[in-house]
Length: 196
Image (cartoon, rainbow, N blue to C red; front, side, top):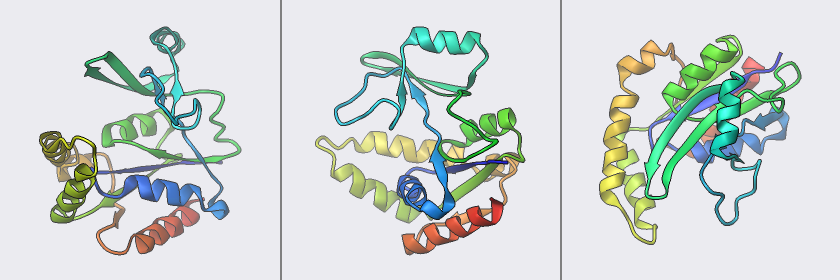
């Protein structure tokens, strides 16, 4: 029986780096769980790699078919963009295990959809000071840094990932990523091996 290993944590906790590192470990045999979006494809993106790029009409068809597991919307200057997870033929939990990346709320919806025995949370923690330093450094590399947006995300994560919410979601296992990232990566990989 396959499982979905679901990485989550506050912004600048190193989730993306861990995600890529875990997928590159062939011995784990994890496949990426590709999310969907209605936003336009960007340069250097490939449909089915970063996202499945779909139209709003395709999203509506998936909704009517009961295939949308979780859905988020963002009001942008180019209109409303949707990001979502859908149950598709590409997910075969009878044969494969997957790695996903998302929020605490999306984890709960995917867990509720597939069942707690098939969805394993990988909660990544970093102390607030280091997260803020990493966020500042990352934002400073942007062509036009938006520090107010960075602060908004930081504060929103404090609420979204409050201790109360993490406990309510039933998450007890945590991985500290405020030291050597390779050590954290190895700790997460070892835990995944124990759950396969």
